[in-house]
Length: 146
Image (cartoon, rainbow, N blue to C red; front, side, top):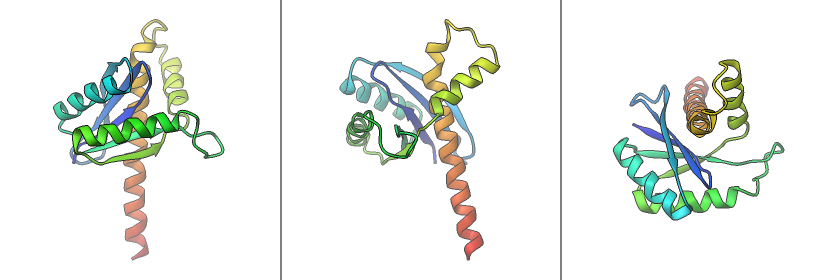
């Protein structure tokens, strides 16, 4: 199944997609948006072109695990996207994905001017890879219990 990962933001939405074996997340681009309805429309188009079958949307959480002030906006976006695409949307903890993306860009000495154009896509890729890894670990643990 192809899974699409989304890092939702007010101005930009990062997208990533898994391979059919659900092992690897690949960056799929950033969409410039002008509000939630524009984001839903543009993301739905991208998801269709990526042949997505499940959407994983990053859910902003505080370090203590509680939902951040942005979580409600993200949930509204996810619900509208589910309606527009007819696909299930799962929310997944996105804590530190942007920090991890910036760290990676710093380590690789990625040009500061180009960062804004890739940070959301890289965050989506990190989020989706974490989701894929957690799914594999969950399946492995289930097998070990039986």
